[in-house]
Length: 437
Image 1 (cartoon, rainbow, N blue to C red):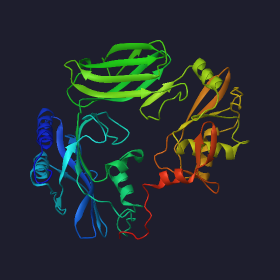
Image 2 (tube, one colour):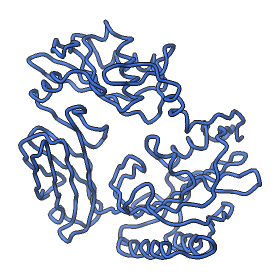
Image 3 (tube, rainbow, N blue to C red):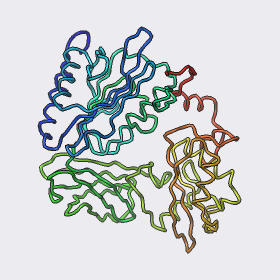
Image 4 (cartoon, rainbow, N blue to C red):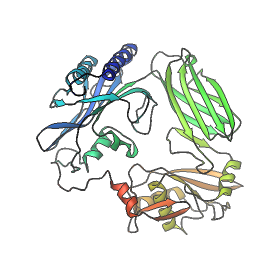
């Protein structure tokens, strides 16, 4: 509702939500509602974020339910029946009112959309919402919701949150820094529990897709539509399933890999879009997509030399400070890979440090604030073993090299972050010290 009138898009969204619930009714159970309400200076309550997710009928009705009461903040997770949810939805549209059990009623004029996406259907484990299953997604932007004070939430009885924004990130399970965009929104997720992509493995000649199902759908009713491309070479294939995984041979390691799961009747189930390049050989950090490069392809990466996402290090023992600087800088920028056992010219010498992974993990825990979650992989290149240290694009920036500073990556160099870069890191952080208690 906007300016006291129900809009056409609100009516369409309500009808679409009702239709989807009817289609998926056999798999649906309760509706989880996670919300963060805060009280403004005029004693009026508003929603920092409210998230509705329809659970599978097999979900435990009493799991993950809580209520935290701070001085001017309420954080709650509760379950509604679908009938209760539809009543809440109707009140939202026709009365501009968010009315939930055991919470203050809130006036919420606004309109439906799909922000920050331009489409309704989102993949499982996307980078913003991180749902376990693909879902139809609706967002309702509240007009004039105002901003929070940024004060920390402290109570003897409840968890401590540095700010309302951090509470929103953790309670709603938002990924990376994108959660800040969703402040003041109501979000509704209608998962499709038929099938999802669990993992995708991309190698030099083959793509393997592992899937999971929940319900009556047969593997034989699922088709994977593949589009792969590298340097103008394109492959389009149908991948048929007779179990929880299937493979396709394409003959090269693609730069672009798109896979859509659909039913044989054309219903969209799940999808993945993955991109890599000669400058970022392992692509963007993605927990459910892995790259298996051949020895030849790894040699090509070494031959191309260091860049903004590739770093060479010979030994941990000789270059501890430089190694930590690189790990911090990569995590603060866009992630990357450190090749251990490779000299500055890209020549494979071999990794001779004992327990190199444990040594690096110890260095990170001792010198990085906050701790950076890295992954290790051993490879044999030209008869010598090297260790690949995979550093993610951090979701808790800025990362600090204790007693030395906050580093960023520019080209193949690590340098101290500038004032503007620091401002960018801290723009979502609170500057107030007075807590909600």
